[in-house]
Image (tube, rainbow, N blue to C red; front, side):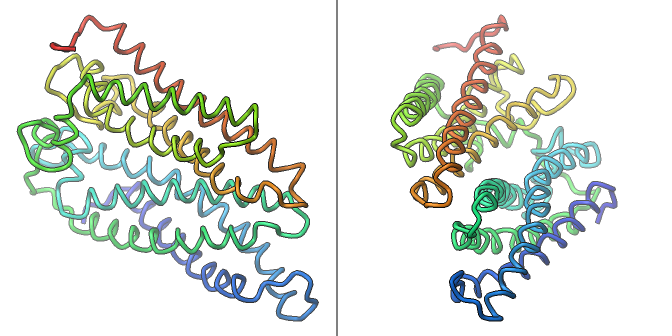
Length: 333
């Protein structure tokens, strides 16, 4: 195992979050089965006291879960010089079989944790814990994701050896290779471009409709998730080519490096904030008629729809500027 301060922080933080999630899940099961605010029993009063403590602890844990995704990618990128063949995080993550599974689990965990923070915020605005079951339901979905991710991350960092020869991003994200990365790199530019701008345009239209009619919240949520997936594919398929000004360099990680002005960090941050806002809107939309949240949920839902739209529009604007500002042009576009 390679000793590195960010690695220690990630491992310790993930273990602590996993421990808190296990405790919270036990309380969550009891809440889903026995919660009854009308009851004055000792068991109900104990649950009410515990849920406040758990919500406070889980707020910090979920915030760490979101931040840890970016710390994990930064750490993988920072370790690249230690491995023969690695040029960025792509090669470091390929150094053993647990790298990319950990990244995918962290991505799912960060999105779910962000959505939980939104639900928890809304629940705390109500005087009668109106979203308590929804909140702990999301927590019970998040818990196994984080537990598996913690184990995968430990296996990944524990299995890293400096003498390992890994693959560079040029070979991993090459249309000539095999695997999911190569398939994304091989996506035809024009159809992917149409899908990218089309998904964001559809999200904007749905978001405007929602803000005017307060209807179609699930559509906005679903389109946010679709736009997130297509945007990641677009980065690999054609956006990255304009950033690197190379027709064969499809790596989604090199854009995080200094020579490209760390442009990848704000771009990915926009995508994650956008999809988290969209998912949060979808979770809250079915509870929009909750009596004690009638003054809270409508403006919150409107704000979430605006955040989702704004994040993806700004991401598209940055991507478009990059493509227009460079003399590089794709053949056959």
